[in-house]
Image (cartoon, rainbow, N blue to C red):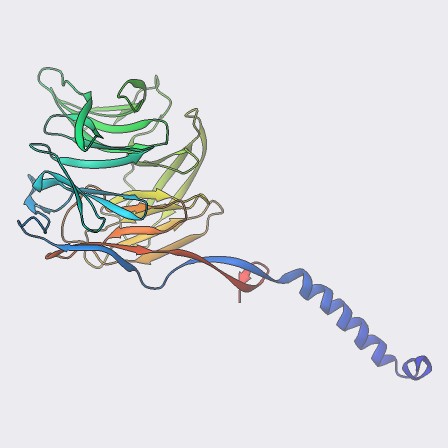
Amino acid sequence: MMSWIRKRPWIIALLIVMGVLGIFVRQHLYRRQIWHFTSHPVTVWSEPFGHRTDSLALAKGLDGQIYGPLAFVIWHNHPIIADSYQHRIIISTHPWHIIATPELLVEDLVYMGKSLYFVDNHTLAVYRIEQGKPVKIIQFHPSPGQSEAIWHMAGDGQHLLLEGVKLGQGQYETWLRQYKPNGQLVQTLNVAKTRWNNPFEVSSHYPIGVVVRSFVVAPNRQLVIEVAGDNPYERLIQLYNVRNQLIRQTQFISPEAIVHSQLLGVNKMGWIYLGINLTEPGKALVEILTPKGRTMVMKVRSVPVGSVVYGAVEPSGSLYLLQSTAKEYCIVKWALVPSERWTWNGQVI
């Protein structure tokens, strides 16, 4: 047998080539787990707009836009909805569980620990639901000649984070603060001020040294900041650890000119979700950025009814997004699921 092979050197050469090729293929071709979103969203909750007890209310804002429920949060796969203009909170179990908030306008919601918190700008206060009723835990008192509002609230598992604005006497000021669950102020994280349309000045006395456009808290309690800027195609993102130290920054590049943007959430793998132009017909999308710089863009339907909160992200990566119409309030879900694919040099084939 060996003498037969020696008389045919091309066979030896072929075997060598095949061996080298096999080693090369093994080094570059392998199966890996790929994460992707389901191709079609699932409707999680939808109800008509109207003024009946089994419908949700609309109202016209000071800016002339029509608004519906202003916020929602996900709790054990159930949306909790702020039916703001009917002064109630709906827990979307079957049947509904209603929490009455008489004379209050719920503008943001957080579920942290075993408690539900909400913001009301009529009384300029933060409330916690206790035994089915709202109990005030934080009360703000604007200075004479100034007005104040709370823009956004989030929770990191141990603290509440509130973003707000002060306006008056020719000055515009934004702030970001951290509170204990009982309402006690822990610290101020950021203050930025401007006068008469001058550029913002950020106070160096606080750990967050940029102007905050929006923020979310990651499952690992990192604070994720969308930095305010005027580039219509870029959004700078900064990440801070639990000691409020800047650990890294990254950047979204949008295929569309950005009219409005809002951080929606972060999953347990560190993927950051940004909503872009969610109320702009034909321009609405969600862009996702991974820690390795990979981006995914999802075209979504624009929403004709305004809100404060347009989306939420579960630690698993599932995206909940408002996809309301003019007649119906609707929350849909895109699940993030794994699959195994063949890859060559890290690229899916």
